[in-house]
Structures are given as C-alpha cells and as structure tokens.
View: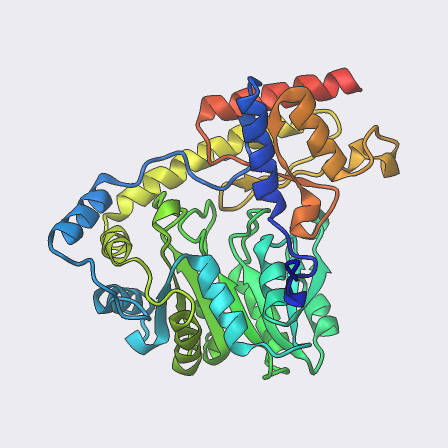
Length: 390
C-alpha cells in the first residue's frame, strides 16, 4: 500500500532556508567555493562556562528524565528574571517547540492567526499544522517592516485567535518601540478574544533600546505568551532550549502537548542554559557589539550593489534588502526574488534566502552571523556578479 500523506501537511515542505543550505552543501561537495550567508547560526562558540556546566551536570548524574515543563532550577530563574511565578514558565526543545505547543494547545480548525510579513518561515507552517489559518499582513520597507494599528484593526475577525509579533524580527531586524507596541495594544484592548505571541528570541541582540511586549503592554499579559531561549545570543543552537512565559492555564495546556511529543527537554542542556542566563552580562554586550560591527559592514556593502537598497536593522543578525529594482516588474533581468537568489548562488557562489520565504517578495535575507572575512567575501562576490549582469 502506498504511503498516504496526512492532509494537515498539504503545502508544507522542508523550509526554503534548509533547501538552500542543502543546495549550497551539494555545490560545495562538487568542488565549488560557496559562501553561505543563508542561515541564522552564530559562528561564535558556546561560552566555555556553559560547556563546563553541562559537563558538571553529566558528571553529577543529572541525566534522568526531567520534568515535562522543565527542571525547577531553570524555570525558577526564568520566572525570577521575568517577575512571574514558576507555573507561568515552560521549557521546551527550542523556541520552535514552544510556538508549536502553543498553537496545538489553542487552535481549532479555522481559527485565524495574524502574522505581519516578513515573518519567520516556520510560523505559517506551524499554524497550518495545528489547524489554523495564517492571515498574512504585508509590512513593507516603507513602514519599517512593522505592523500598523490600522492594519491590525482591519484584519481582526471573530475567528482571530492570535497575533504573532516578532521583535527583534527575523528576517528584517525590526524592533517595535514602546509607543508602537502601545498603539497595537490599544487596538487589541477592543478585541479581548485575541491573544499575543511575542517572539523575543533575539532580545539580547538589540542595537537600539529594546522594550519587551509584556513591559510595553502590561494590560495584555493575561493573554500573552512571550517566547525566548538561549540559541542565538549564547550561540547554543544545537543545545535546543527555548521557553515560554504566559498565563498558567496556557502553560499547563502546552505542557500537556509537550508531554505527548517529547516530554522534558534535554536535562544536560537545561543545566547548561541555567549557567548561560546567569552569566556576566558583559559577555552578551561584547557579542552584540561584534554583530553591530558586522551589521554596518553588511549595510554599506549591500547599498553599494547596483539595484539593491538596505536599511540598517535594529537587532538580530539579518539584513533584509530590497532587490525590487533588479526584477522584471521594474525592468530588471530577474523574474522574482527567488530567481535572483538562485542566480546569485550559481553565478557568484553566495547562498541567500529569497523574501518569498518570509511572506514578503521583492527582498532577500542575508545573515551576518558569520565571520567578518566570510561576510566581506560574499558581499564582494555579490557586487561583482550583479555589475557583470547589468
């Protein structure tokens, strides 16, 4: 009997980011010199004291099944820093699982989730897998890649269940100001059935003042889930630890989902994460300053390429430049952003991710989570290739 794919997976495939990374790897295996600027994985090592904490935990025998919602020590510290109760915290196998847990725990078929675009690629697929309907609201460069209150108001229906707000944003690096969050909260105050998922995984990689959604809109915390983790700021992508902070009844429902999927996150990784989030803040400041230097290099390099336009991101380690002037709609040589990125990979040996993957075509994402010489080489290749094409 042939395998029958579940209907819930209709339209859901391996993410384009992963597909591009795999294509780059195949070209590299064939002997091509490829500069990959496509993935959001810092080149910096996990801090030594974090590795030492993991080793000590393993040596101490902390290798048994952990509690489903996370070890008490880590949950207590997350709760202390967020000024909430431990019952309002769940630790999961990465921030992605936190989001999936929340959607599976709260969505019924046909429920709607508002997603400002550009958005992280997994948002829409997670919503669809949970039976929900993504409602994508384009937020162009001209409005700073950020959602406007009037857009939000117009999109809310009786079926709206969540607003997903990613700040700092992947892929644009946009950060919502306190006043901008407050303006959105004014709209949401009129629609008490709409919850807010605030994805703040890049919080500690902010180049401008950052205000948490919970801090800017305290009146919404009773229907808010804040998502965070150690992957990006501490270079712990492979340790797979993220967490959610929200109302206890939501956290309890999410734990029920998690208990039937993975149970508790890796015990050793949880002890390592505790060491990470209690470290000297100077470590993160130094890393943030390094990424700020790379950001400036990237923005200057992209704006030197004919047909590209790039605003400086406020946070994270991505640039999301416009390539619209190079596309056929504007008389350019490329059909769309995916065509452009495919050509750059083949012609220049530089891996980029098209904007369509993030719900906003006409752009592409370049990650500067790489060493400076790698970034400089990629920018030079990109500039030379485009100049030859034009």
